Image (cartoon, rainbow, N blue to C red; front, side, top):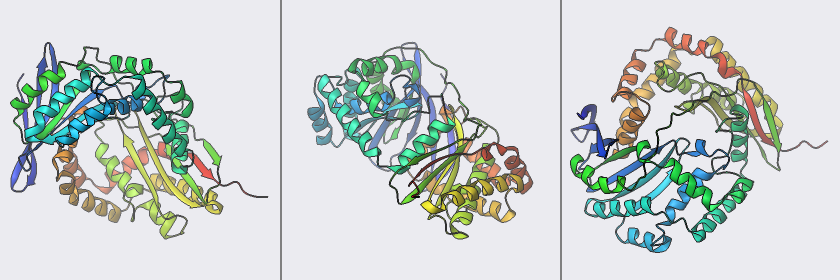
Length: 432
């Protein structure tokens, strides 16, 4: 298959950086590769991204994706956790796995001279994870300990309850690490089954880069990819947030009121107006100091140290969310101000000064988001994963630069669904 080579207009140390979208043939399966060569340092790295293997696939076993990722950190069944870790540490190799909402990721990086051995160790891990009873009980104990600590984390509680409110009866309504009940009920066989059913060759995307040639990388990766079992490509479902405004209050011995709020945001990955959402979100609450919410809640009224909101547009779900802390006695006033300000923003829109300020920051800070190889590969992967053509991010910046105030405010007014706010609160019960 012909390779598509894209030159990004990113100037780093006088060199134009280019990402390549290619494929590795493993039998009849063509595994996509997002690649960038970078000789700045003698290192190389690979991420093997498994689609449809994140926490949204937990189903009846809440927390199983993150549990699996933790078990993948226990080395191979033949070597065991300690000896496997020592082999990696001796050669300064980093190898781990982590689970997100939609994906499970194997990640390995090392000095160039150790990279062949690093990939060999990755292949061994993929082939024979340490699914032993001892490893399983160790991860279960650690997970239960972590969840016990979360019982006093009021931010965690408020955020989790918000997700349950706005994504009721969807895969996003459960904690990604599970709950004590679900982890206690988890069996080793469940983890093994999840691995066999979700981790397959057909669902892989490779993200790689560093001081290595692409063809050399492909040759080195082929034995690793051959360890992945064949499976079926699964279409990713999409879920809207709940449009019915609700409220949940949890009473704890807290010195502050923790307020999390959220609403639907009717946009999907690939929406042509995503760049407008980025600007609007920056102005309303994502920019920190200078944002509408920060100005109204903290600067004008002194109700909170900080107040943030953001819009999230994904392949599987989208939403508008935010949070702040305030004194317990200021709880109702703070909620009222947040709701009023979001409503006013939708009805009246932004000002020219706010738009100009957003443009200056978003356009001016762009070089900082492309300084490292990791940042550039993450962006290239994001574009590929979401079905955009490479260079999409630069095109979005060009659109932001040309965006007019009437265009922005028409977009903001159209998305009045963000005023259907649900609130999740942790606060101290009033004494009577």
